[in-house]
Image (cartoon, rainbow, N blue to C red):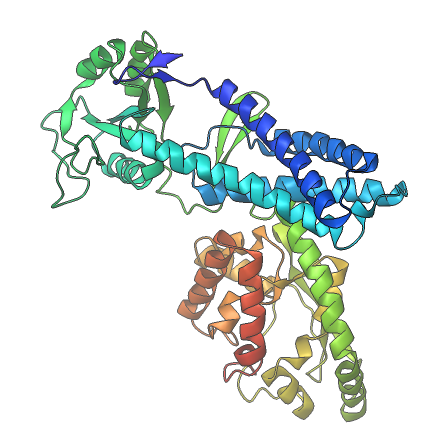
Length: 483
């Protein structure tokens, strides 16, 4: 427990976590009560058993997702997503248990269970939003704030200050930059803005002193948090200052200068007790992987049911118009660079699958059949890849897979090229709907495609996948660059 500048006791995080747990449990039970009163006008015992089971499941899910941690520095949207995932997972488990055990409760019938789910979810998110609004108002008045010092005076220090200022709900008060270098430069966080007032957020943060000044203020209890933005080569300086800050009760955070790297879903991990920073992370693992896989299976089955007739017609046309097999399977790189066989309707007179060298299809390519030219121009030759989706080798939306030989060539020429393989390749993708498809006869064309792919990986969402699918339907099939 501690005191802030206005003398208000700072709440202990574990107390708030306990309170949040109690509120969530009460809300789940309240959701059942509301559902029962609306649907059956009574409260059967089986309803209470279901509520108890849901409470237990939610608490287990909450431990894995850590939804009861401090969300001071994160957005309400980030918190809402985690809470939604936890409640959805808990609800699916309790619904499955109720169905398998044949509990005689109308709570597990439609539309009762959907009413319980949405009522509880709205309440779970609603009280968090209300709490955020209330806490932000208190912090705007100077209560429950955090006095922050930034060590360093470079671009990273300025970036940290900008991020803290944008976190308007967090109650961060930036005291200034501290540096031991000679002739430090005074920096403005937001040009042409006034300095901090009691009811506003600091926009100009002058250099407040050197390391000795910082340590003195930390010992005096004037600083709650210190962010070290010293370059990684300054190991001795970091060790020196952290050792002296350990004589105070100030929280110290090291912000590594990782902006020099091409970050892809960077995150921290616990390596058997040692914290590690992942510069290149894994975008769709865990819950996100399950969600995207469910999306792929459901959509692939629906689409295959719709296109099964046209696929039979195309298969017959391929067989009748040229010699050779109906399908062509070529080796491509998939998730994590693992090779797999990709299905296509044969569009050429030959079926090349030489991993060492593959010639890209070009305009007026003599290997392409007349029917094959039409199939490639309309992307109909790609339809069998929905079978790859069901096999689990591909997704409906993702970076288009290239031939092995092309991967080996471009991985050396384009920085971050192989990061495209951090997710499953797709039948369509953000690059394709933006026109970055077809022959890549110049390096800049491939670089443009890779930029689109990495942008998609960094910002993936189910809603964006649906958008890309719709764009593919209306403008992604036929393209002048496809031949």
